[in-house]
Length: 121
Length: 107
Image (cartoon, rainbow over all chains, first blue to last red; front, side, top):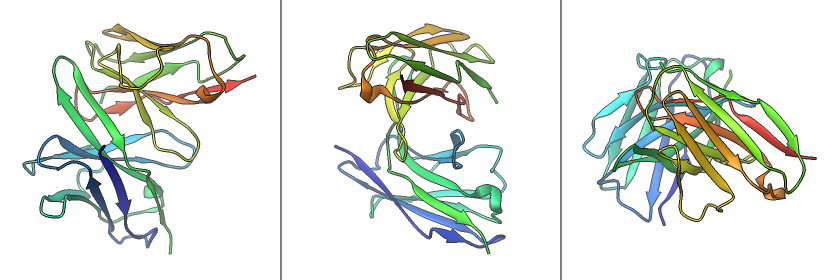
């Protein structure tokens, strides 16, 4: 059973870089897509982007100029960097697997438990 | 971006009642529509993918339907553990987008 776990600083200063790690267990990241989604407190979900097992990334235009995703197959981990953060980037950040197969089957499952990142000085 | 709307935004029902949530994307998305359940403090959990396919181990009281620009998630015979917020999500085109959520509460 695949499990994902986010890790990283819970507090980041404005204008600095938010860096998170997602560690995958129970499955290899040699297939599928690996995604980041965030959710500000009491609000909805925002898909930030994904990276394929081959290292090709696809980002949401809302953060495209500030975001970078990468992966390390040897560690079975993938990463999120969000640069020049502001208070508006304060949210719970989730990592997740995206599966694409068959007809119309393109979904996000499972999700990590999420990690709260607060942007504040 | 494809905008997603959901209705109602919240609903309060009795145990055993039937609940239907509607999701309307702003663009025809064929059947590229997924439903998630989120409980407070927890990550979303996939319930339905490809509009109507139930994810493994999801109770059969959940069902999804629709295509194009109107989709539904129905919970027949609501149980106490179904109290949660439900989100739809389109995977038709990037960036993937989610509906604003429907909060289901038990009376």
